[in-house]
Image (cartoon, rainbow, N blue to C red; front, side, top):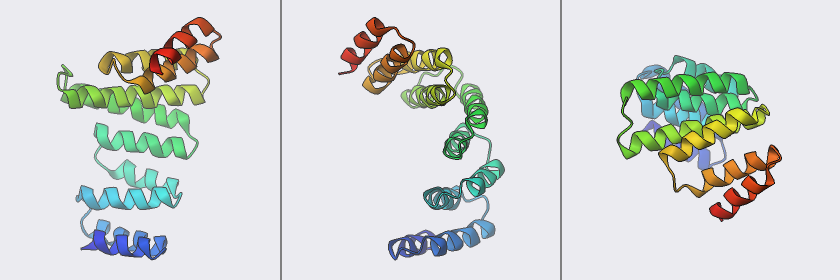
Length: 171
């Protein structure tokens, strides 16, 4: 099994061999998403973000792969492209699950909002970050991490009363 072989190389501290094995496997079976995911994990760990982005540009443009693409753009210090990928992920998720009734779809939408909120923070667009964290809380109202991040936004915006309220609530 190619994935097992890549794990062995990885454990032998030979990450480039692990990547090479997975690249060969991916070229032989480009539609196998397990192989693609393993290759992306290895290349991300190795800091090969441009190559990861190229692979993800060829992947199906579904919310799942678009979220991975946004992560790669963020790691590659390209927050504007990360925002575009997250917006496309949100659109795709809404098309696939228009009502967002299942816990999985609601959780995924919250993840998109959190990721986008973090990107907005990097860009110092605090209003956008605030709205995305609020939207994430709509989907997962009891998530303390989201509440805490919203508190951080309020602190950065200078509203210490709201910041303290949210951070205490998260705590």
